[in-house]
Amino acid sequence: MEDMSDVTSAVEAADLGSNPIVSKLDSLSIPHTTYAHTLCMTADELVANVPLAGDNEGHTKNLFLRDKKHGLFLVTAATDAAVNTKELGKMLGLQGKTNLRMADEAILLEKLGCRKGCVGPLSMANNAEKDVTLVVDESLLKLSRVHSHPLRNDASTSMAPADLMKFLKEIGVEPTLLEFGKKGDEPPAPAKGDKDKPKIPPKPAGAKKSVNKDKKTTKKGETQLALKWKKSENFAMWYSDVIVLSEMISYYD
Image (tube, rainbow, N blue to C red; front, side):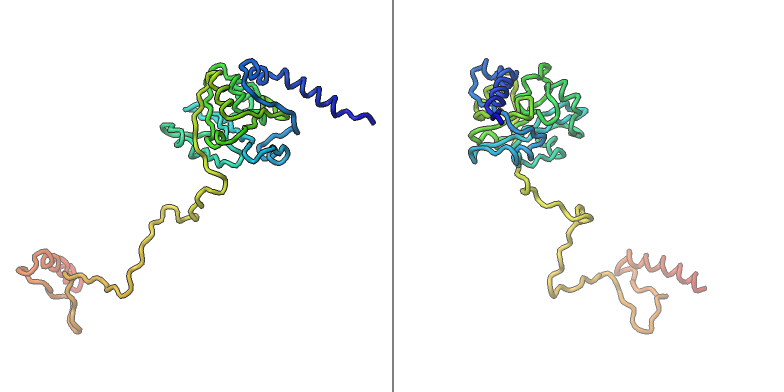
C-alpha cells in the first residue's frame, strides 16, 4: 500500500497557508510556526495529545465569557491556571454585581469568527466592533513559545510571547494582564456551616469565674420577701427590689 503521509502533509500545509490568521501574521512579518495536529476540543486534550518540544512552551486555555452588564471577555490562560469566574470580576475591577458565564457559541461565531474549541487570542483579529475584552495570563509571557489555535482546533500557531503581543498591538487590541494561580494552589474551602461561625478562644487554665459584685446572696432560712438593699446604699438596686417584692407579695397574697 502506497504511503500517503507526505501527500497528506502537503495538503495540510496548503490548507493552513490559506488560513486567515496565518495570512495576517505573514502580512505583518511576524515570526510564527503553524502546524496541524489531532483535533482537540479542550485544553486537557491538547496537553495529552499534542506534546510540545520544550519545557518552557505551553498551550493555552481559553474561556469566552459574558456578563449582561459588563459585556464580553476572552480569557487566555495557561492550561494549569486556576481561573475562578466568581473572583474574576473583582480581579478586573468590575463595579457592581457580576455574573460571568460561558457565552453561547452563536455569540462566539458572531464576534470572533470561530466555533467552540477553536478560540484563542489570535481570534481577536475578527472582533471588528472591538467589544470583546481580552484577558491574558501573565505567566504565558514568561514562556519561550505560546501555542494557540488559528481559528481551528486541528492546528496550532506557535510564537514567542513578544510576537503575540506585537500581533495584538497591530490589530488594535490592548490586553488586560492578570496573574492567575495554579490549579491546586487555591486555599481550602471552609467546612460547611463553619464559614461565618466566630471562633471563641478557650479560657486559660485556672481562670476564676467572674462574680457580680452588685448581687447579694440569701442566707439559708431567709426568704426573698425582704429588701436586700438600703436606699442609701444603692438606690437603683433598692428600687428594683421594691418593684419585685411588690409583685411577689401580690402573688403570695
